[in-house]
Image (cartoon, rainbow, N blue to C red; front, side):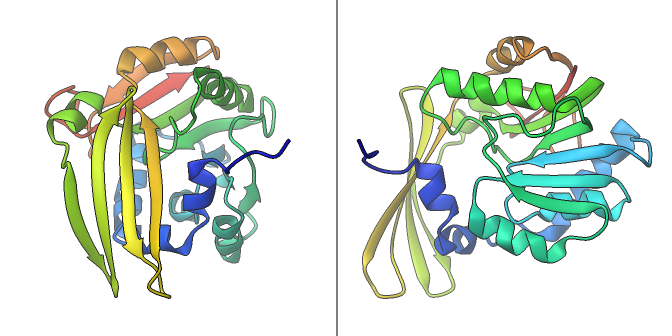
Length: 246
């Protein structure tokens, strides 16, 4: 029996329009955040790292630029194909589903940047992903998860807006539904055909993450609220950047 439709993240992240809408996510932002993390974490030069849901590799490239041994994995064939153009001795990319283990007990550090978690329809799949993150780390290894801050996002939710990117006008509608942040994306494609994509991200709290990753054998050791690594605050800062230890 055929599946009626692919998951939203497979169709949307594989679309060229995803990259057009989010083209403002630039290299400088990634560079600044990676610099902050490295200053805080102080990794040894020979550290092995995995960038989970790496997209086209903007964070992986920054990490590898510091000399670490970096592997990027992502479900999108199109994103990995582009990322592979940046491969070198200490930087490799692979197509891989985060719900399944990649290497076991291999990495010193794992990173999951820019709310690249919470995509799945069931808690079972989220727990599968959390356990896979944990299995990939060596004993004592660290996982950094960069996620939206639920309470801040709710209080600052823009229900509807229009965004112009090149010749495309994107009509965005946002809401909280069934404990997921939903973003509906409407626009006309290059052939002027109406298109609709959807993003759905679980509205996890810090407590949700602590419980979930505890089942994956990971303990929370630090939490920050923005890319400058300010102390986490549920109402005042936009991010929930969590550091877990195996």
